[in-house]
Amino acid sequence: MEGEEDVPGSSVMAATMALVAASAPASVPGQGYIFLPFRGGVPFDVEIDVATIASANEHEAQILTMRGDLIVMVDSYASKPGENGTCTGGREVWVRLLDMAARRERSAILARSCRRGVTASDPLVTWDADGSGYTINLTSAAAVRVSAEQDG
Image (cartoon, rainbow, N blue to C red; front, side, top):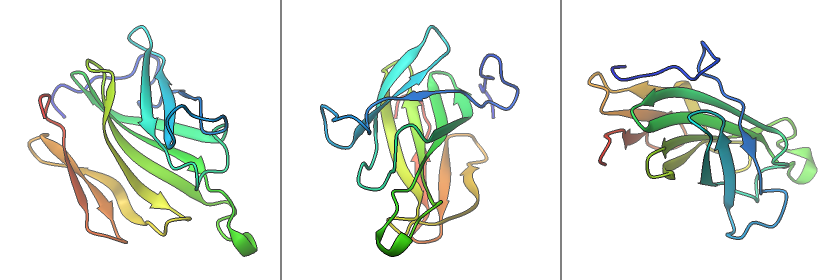
């Protein structure tokens, strides 16, 4: 994708990120915190679903791409076990569009969820040919297109 850049120290664009909140009372319900450890460190408040995740400590994240100040990333959390042992070993997966310049989350789409019955196909994200946006390939609902334009 034109304008992409690699995350320092990673050829596969994976980043170690800290999620702080979900296990402690958040100042805003359904809000977590992600810290990106590059470009001097960038903190973001992000949407999470505290009803479905087991622990913020079981968090994994991967940056798919960077375009200017925009970052598309996937992060996932262990599912909170349901009644009768359902969702043990399940994951809650989000696709996020983060704006580093504005230091805000522009989009958060729940892409896979054992607890909410959300499923997606592989590949999870498909980029538009012109790089203006991407589609999250859900199978449990209509696919979701997200604009990745700098100003939109």
